[in-house]
Image 1: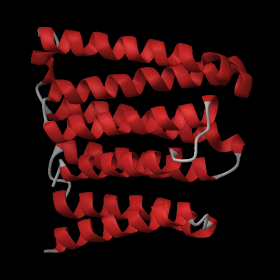
Image 2 (image 1 turned 120 degrees about the horizontal axis):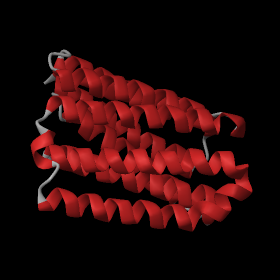
Image 3 (image 1 turned 120 degrees about the vertical axis):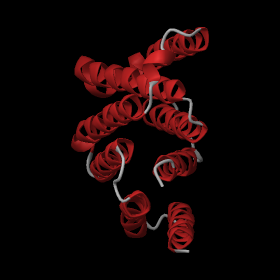
Image 4 (image 1 turned 135 degrees about the vertical axis):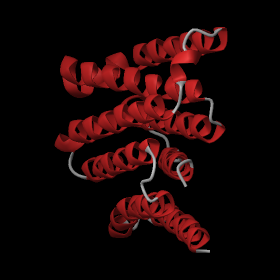
Length: 214
């Protein structure tokens, strides 16, 4: 019952966040964005009791994601700090997937190799699409940071696929989509619905990661 209540509150908070974006309620958005992540973290801690290696890694990753959310709400100069926070979060997720599942046995299978090849192709293609715009925004240093982030999040998605857990695969793919839309909107072609897509896919992804350890 308590878990259901937490899920209900998270869904309501996300709906209010999307409404705040639509109504351009900046203060409400700044409260609800990190607030929703706090609720997800509480749900993960309460539901899992941090009883497994995976649960501890996931909660740490959620905390770094919360820090990333906060940094990205601040001025432009904090963008790299937000990027770094999410990069660490993805590294922690990777550690959790490799530590919580026997993924080593899956690395050399044909499916895993093909999945890795597809993700590598997407990562390189996406970086090439963004490269000129990223350099315009922040020079070669920002391009290196973005390239590193794309590589790490692609590795995170691949690791989730190696784990073979459906909820983790869906969560990682939604995270991938969320960050891709955010990058296109920020560096390439801003479009009105971007923030709705980013927020809905991002929080769904994080909620799925939290759900995987409950």
